[in-house]
Every structure is written in C-alpha cells, then in structure tokens.
Image (cartoon, rainbow, N blue to C red):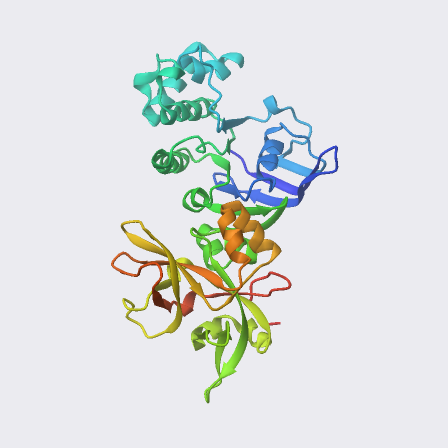
Length: 401
C-alpha cells in the first residue's frame, strides 16, 4: 500500500484544451478518496495520469516515495477497475482473474491461492468456471474487482465502475465495494459522476470543476460547509435551492433578515448569525441564499415556529417515505455561471426554471403532507441550516474579515 500525491499537476492536450490545472491532492495510505464532478471536469484524466495512461504536462505524480511521471503503467503496481468490466469473453471467470498474474510469471499455486481467496471474499467462488456471458452485470463487476484484488497492488484505481448497473444493484455494489476496501485497507482512488456514490463511499471527497480542485474534505463537511456555490449546488440530492436576497435589519431588536421580495423574507436566528460573522458586512447588500430541500417542510406539520415562506405548489412526487414538492415563490432565482453549470449537469428543466421571473424551490416534505399541485402552501424553513454566498465571488460567507 502507498499514498498517492498530485503536486501542481497540469494536463494540456495538443489542441490547447486544459483538462487539469494545478492539481494538488494527497490520498493517504489506505484511504478511499473519491473524485467527483460533472462530465469534462478532469476527474478521469487525473485518474489516468496516476495509472500512466495519460502523460503529465507539468507537475509530479507520486506513488509512495516515488515520482512516477515517466514510469511505465505496467511498473506502477496499480490495479484498475473500469466501468466496462473489460473481461475476456472466451475465458472463464477464474482465467480472467488469473490472467494478469500469469503475464507476470507468478507461480501457479500462488495464482490459485489468490484467485480462490478473492472469489471467497466477493462471493463468486461458484462461478469460477463460467464464462462472462453467463453472469449478471453485478457478477461481472465482482469478477473485475477480483481481477484487481488478486494483483495485491499498492492501490486500486476505479473509473465509474458502477455506471453500467441498474439503480438497485448500484446501491448494493457501492456498499460491497466500501466494505471490501475497509477489509483490505488498500489505498483507493475512485472516480464517479454520481455525488450520492461519492458521499456514501469516500473517506474524503474531492470536487473538481473545469479541471480545478474546488474542495476536498469529509463528505459531511462538504455538505455542511461548502466553500462556494458550485460545491453547494453539486453536493446534495435534490440540489440546493438558490435564490437572491438582500440582508436587512428589522424591528426593535435589530434582527437580521434576508429579504427575497416585497412579500417574502427569511428571518435569520441569532445563533445562525453568530455562526456566520461574515454576514455583518453584507447588511444592505445582495447575497445568494441557499436552502437545502430537506430544510423545507409543510408548515402545517412542523412543530417549531421558525421562518415561513409561502408559495404555490407546481408539482409533487410521492416517494413513499417522503413527498418531493416543487413550489413557486416570490423570489429571484440565483442565475450565475456556477448554478447554470450545476443545473445543466442535473437537468435541463432546472435551467429553464432558473430563467423565470420567480423561483421554484424543491422541498422534501413528510410523506403525510397532503399538498396538491395548484394549491397555496406555507413552508417551514430550518433556518439553522441555511447557506449564504457572495454573488460576485461565489464564495460561501462564513467568517468576517
């Protein structure tokens, strides 16, 4: 096992396209690090540079204590798992798993031991004599994992290995891969477009955008304290609601509110203001207010007497455990380069909503809510979990100067 490090790494293609820019990232020995971001953000390119499948334009890639910029892929002691499985159709499962070891002239008895051990771990021992065409997608992915495990490499590199599986199987396999990594303790660099995978699997998650590292941290920290609009919008499902507002002080107690329109405002409790001292500099100025869908609920069912917003229900999606509600409110959507990019990556319909005169917020209501499309609704806002951003820099507002 070994750590992986990117040191000021650039990747520029012959036509001038810059895929990765000044990437500095360390993956600790035994860590499960996930690279996540929209299509074209550079995450797969970064993985391929570690694997030796892409040349590095500038900087260094290190595996352990060794700079591997000019080390051939076959000599880096890494094992890759691809989304396409890349199994040989004419070989049995056992032969597919053993093939790389045979090329390296590993003794036959050692190959047999490793294949049997990996098959036991993965629960595919009964399929060792089958061909890939006789296996399901999940079983094929286990074989691909087994081929990597038998190598006993310094690190695993995984490039969207679950993207070809159906939704139910993806949930199962991501739990299995996470458990397997913990059991083996092998350093793992995992690339995915799916932020749910990233949040549930990684010890830490690195968010990339246009080839640049935006933030790297534990999943819960990314969720609770995103550094900018892009990270805030990309992490979380459904995506965070973003609206424009003006910070004001109201009443005899000089309470802080965010005014969304002439009729809509969100009162910010003193404890939230205390946790965001940087807000003081924005009184009388515009900000972008972020509200996660899980922090909106049907006010008729809410117990607290906190902030309220009213709107009209446009759409409801009953999921059994909850009701996802789309509500039009009197507020201006936050239309920025970052929010456009996140919305386009998720759904073009979201882009259309961002271009309207009013904002459409998504709330995750309790399943027992009986709101219907066309109805007026009052929403309870969990003000202790609000997010605030500078509309010019797109940076989150936390500390003061």
